[in-house]
Length: 125
Image (cartoon, rainbow, N blue to C red):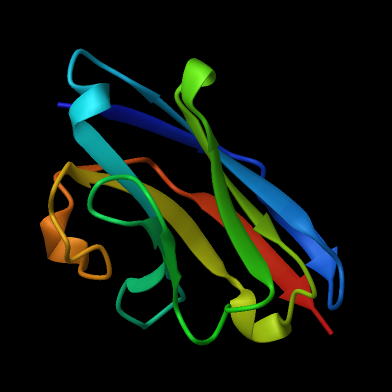
């Protein structure tokens, strides 16, 4: 199992930027790939960004493509989500999750076996 802790959320104005962090720990960290999801009130958890099934390459939801960037510091076992040009519709609780290395379905929440507690992002117009 992988333990995940998100941080970096907050309340910002439209057009601002935020950087979220996801610190991963546990014996099997190296056998997992991290992805970001978000959940707005009354809506299902939706995919935001992740790395490919071997950890190489990235994938983004259409709604955030060109504005968000996922990156990692492998030495620190930390994954980041840089969010630029934020919009009110980006308001949600953001979660990082971990799925097994080799799993290609990074956009499906059910493929993730560990989740963090979430961090709130609120964007006002």
